[in-house]
Image (cartoon, rainbow, N blue to C red; front, side, top):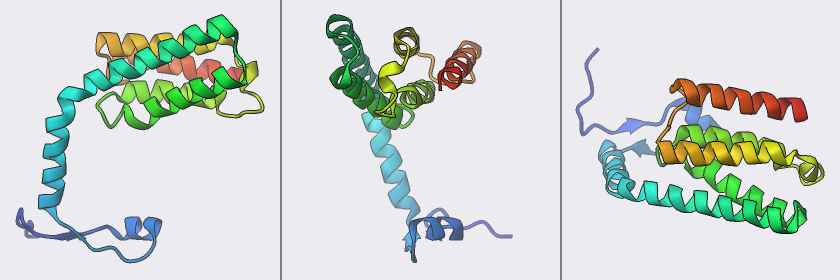
Length: 159
C-alpha cells in the first residue's frame, strides 16, 4: 500500500465523524504541524503555568485551614482541581491530570464533597505539588504510578 505524501489531506476516521456528528472536512497535515509548532513555542510557559496553578491550589488549602472546609472553599478547590485536570496533560503533565482527576472524583458531588476527608484532600494536593516540583510527569515513573494507585484506592474506599 502506498504511503500518502506529507502534504496529502486525510479525512477524519469514520468513528470520529460519528462521535462529533455529521460530516467533517479533511484534515490538513500542514495545519496539524502548525498547531504542534505553536505548542512547542509555548511549551516554555507550561512550567510557569503549572507553578501558578500549584500556588492557587496551595492558597485554597490555606484558606480551608483558616475558615474551614465549607461550601465556598470546597467550590474553589473543585474549580482549581478541574483546571489542573483539564490542562495538565495538554501541557505535558499527565500524572498531575490523573491526580487532579482523582481529587475531582472525591469532591465533585456538591451533596457529598464536604464529607471528604481533609487528610485525603491534602494528600492529593501534596502529590500534585511534589509531581510539579520534582518534574514527575507520567505514571510510567514507578513513584508516580504507586502514588496514583494509592490515591485512587483511597478515593474508592471513601466513595
